[in-house]
Image (cartoon, rainbow, N blue to C red; front, side, top):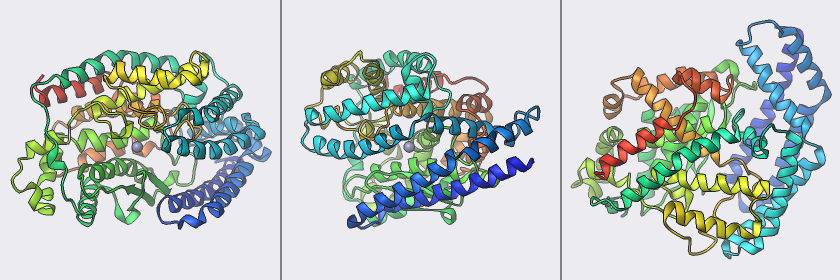
Length: 501
Ligand code: ZN
């Protein structure tokens, strides 16, 4: 390794450690921090953030990066060092393209807009949020122009979360899925074999749910020596190194599914981060390939594994042991059907597997139209409601349950939503490849043998961290580019069976 590269790596390690410390402050804020500490914590986080930005955008970093690139020119383009420099170049160019005053204005407006949004949502008053959204769109457009793009302004934003993804490809993939999703949703609604999920509602004491969720996530391979589970109002996963990857969940003592599948989801994220190679620790490669790839891991464990008949077979004895009153006289098949109930609903985060992607499609289409000016902010609630009616057959009774429900637009995260659906598609494509590689997969899951499945993911996804762009990783792991085919095949087959279509 050249002297330049080794100096660059040691600088990056320091920056990474500061980032990990900042993440720990954020985890604490979401879990145990006393409410009175809000103002001081905001200052602490902002100070660390500014310091990290200063260190990273220093001219010396740019010089070391350029020299390291020259030193490694002509060497193996697929080596970890070459890939590390490629990832760093992306990060560095982005960081220096954004003018400091725009970054500061964006941060200030985000803090303000989130506060305005919270109050607007509580009052279900879109007009109160509209000016803040207008300004957020304006700042976002300036951000996109500074970052640059080839074909569509949305591309610059998508690229932040899903490196290399193009707006036209995502639009085409979504347009292809839309009619199939709408007709599947309608066929399910008209099915003569509706699903009864009352058995998931009842008395499920939180302490017992806690024990059950921990048994489930440990069974699939989440390592509690290098992680822990806590409670948070909005479940998330975070890490402060590959050896400290934490998940959170949210318990409802009257509804079993919420915590259990939230835990499976977050443990899926956690397994990914616990599987990064030790040599990537505190380097630009010790991260996820993208948000979509990250979400493919959580969705795979939550849905393709967690909501499968095979996993329900494995889980059922644990359920009966933990909640004998509720499950002593229930058949495993009734449980499997209950956790897979499909019903159009207003709130995205509560949506089932079939309707979830329609919620994302709607947001993606609206974001594109807002950014290009095709849709005015004042017309947004009506456009939202019209799409809800067209795609899901329901119209929200108010804006709180409609256009105001998500934090993303007030949080400056325009361009983020598609990564949820990309994650679903990737999970379906990986699941297909896993089925080919492990013909005994479902029988193993039913027996509680998760090591072969986790081993495949470690070998084909986790161990690469951020070495490859998402498109490269998908091609390498599955032998073909991203397609919606496998996920749609999975959904169609599963729900035709459940609803006897
Ligand atoms: Zn997730």
